[in-house]
Image (tube, rainbow, N blue to C red; front, side):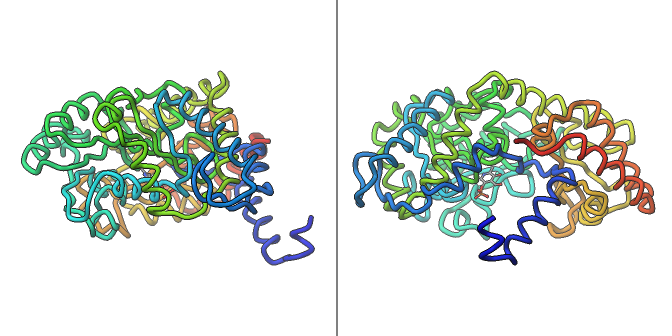
Length: 414
Ligand SMILES: Cc1ncc(COP(=O)(O)O)c(C=O)c1O
């Protein structure tokens, strides 16, 4: 109400975006719909407070209640993921990863991560990211035939280059990750192993993806993807991490503040605490299970329409499609699908011959539609629409009508 009176221009745009989300299907794998409870905490008066430092050791007064909020958030994360130490202050996933570098490496050190075009993240050593600019980044990839992580190649590269730190995890990898194998490789060369579970955090919390915690030293994550919280980041130190370096928690905390950030966003931290509480209950386990069931249902139905699924399937919340047999680029498919209210993103496929801005594939995810309560039946319907619009771009009107009807039946969460 207040916003409308004070700034009608922004209020109108928020209203339009709300309507867009209500009337279309959000199927970008890194997106979700958080609860109203999370948004209430996020939009609270906590945004006004400066709290540089950590609970009990702040550089500003007036943090009696803020300290309690941050401690609750830390304790909930420790319990949910079974880790020894958590920093909940990173503003998002990339600053969390930057802080890990600052805590463990020096400029010029060798690091290893999955290549961006193979499904890795920018911060894992991509040449245009700080991680590729300040570090000697070695990239590993997927096996060309199976399109799965090539653990033999990872081992060979690790032995050859002796990295200080190895990343495991990615943004467009749809299969289970063998954290145990990665742990053995990192141990054999004495490297820090960091699992970036930004995409699968909710699946790990819900028990439908193997947890990296027993096998890695550090875990980073965003809080806004499958975990279904506000935008934010966390860095966790495991028991194995403490055994490797007792000072890791101190190093991580110092890297986040004062190393990389100033005042933490305590409104976000309170909202992360709310999402962690939500993620601890049985309903969330069911939600995580359904996310994967839905992604698998989508894969199976799309295969019937001769869509070429990278690696032949999915074990998590996302799938990658190679569109080359459909005579359409990823960018064209993204636009076509957007015109009927299905929001996905164009994506490079492993060994993509096409440039990154016009890649050969698309990436689709089920976290947000599952939050709306959709199940396998609706996934089959959506797969049918994806096929229809790609086969016959003239069918926009009828497909858009179907999408609209489905969205009305499955409103956004309250
Ligand atoms: C694996 C992975 N790590 C880190 C990030 C970075 O998160 P943010 O965009 O919040 O900086 C992402 C974002 O997509 C990601 O997929």
